[in-house]
Length: 72
Image (cartoon, rainbow, N blue to C red):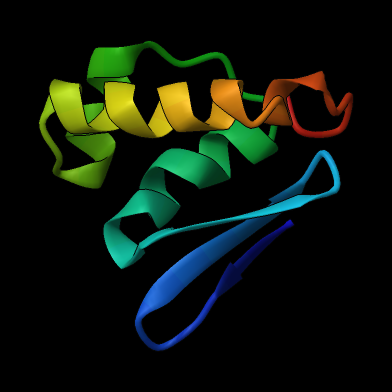
């Protein structure tokens, strides 16, 4: 589940809460929806550098968020 607050976007997954800057919403929404997207596409959609998107995804993987069937 993705919740957007005033300053942060929060992803609840794998019994964990992940907080990111608001710009991360554009990266998280397609992933939560189960869409297949590449790193460059996520970066372009979010208006972020590929490196920043890669760091965000690494944080999710380290937190085992992808193990949640409804997430990815």
